[in-house]
Image (cartoon, rainbow, N blue to C red; front, side, top):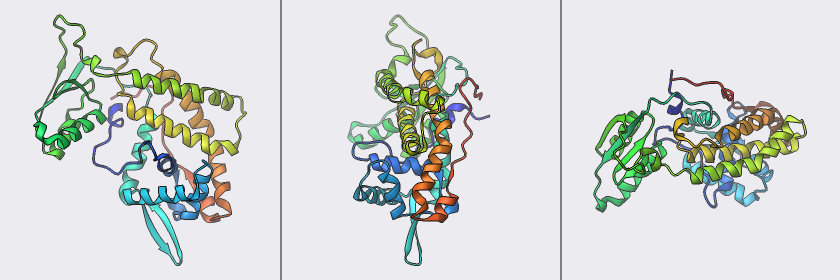
Length: 314
């Protein structure tokens, strides 16, 4: 079977949903909607439908149209003309990847395979004169689960040699890759796990719990209604995606005893599963008077997600 962490870090050069960045919240929200629901059988979305959906999140008409334009430029959506009407459907390239990406996000935080105690080490040499290439390599290694142990020496607890090799090949950079156990020699501060700064990750988990724990409790008590469900489910997905992108997914043995991922994962599961039918009902209501055919045919994306406590083995 596939190692659970293979889903955690997709190949570098693929169409991606918009990342949460300053000034891009409308793109991130639209990207989350496109990831969480299937509009293909409905024939795509009109710009009017996009404006209506994002208005639910407090996004202005101009902001929604700007987000749509930018996502089209990114290649996530492609326009199709039906008579006088232009609809937007997910592109073939994006369709091949966005389901896997959504699955990786919603599965994040489920039990990882047992760690074998070994480290993958990537060593490279890129001249300072090629700073853009050097930074691109570092970014892709970091996105692939590596952290800088020393200058031009990067480490990862999982076996990511094939992934790192593809990064080097794509960039035209030779990487020396090997995997083995770490042997401490006097200085306990010089351990590979210290290459990973978990403070920012913990802050994201704490924020997630502060924001969403009471909402999960309300779901359990049956106190959340459909009029809030679409916004809440989409926001939870966006927030969990941000954590999944930031957390290096270290083995349990390398994490603090009070690491909050398990508690946060339970909150995410309650909201993700519990809000699905309500959010879909709200989505259909919003679209019904704009495009009834779309409203009838839109569905939740079918993603198989193991519940917390269910091990995912290699």
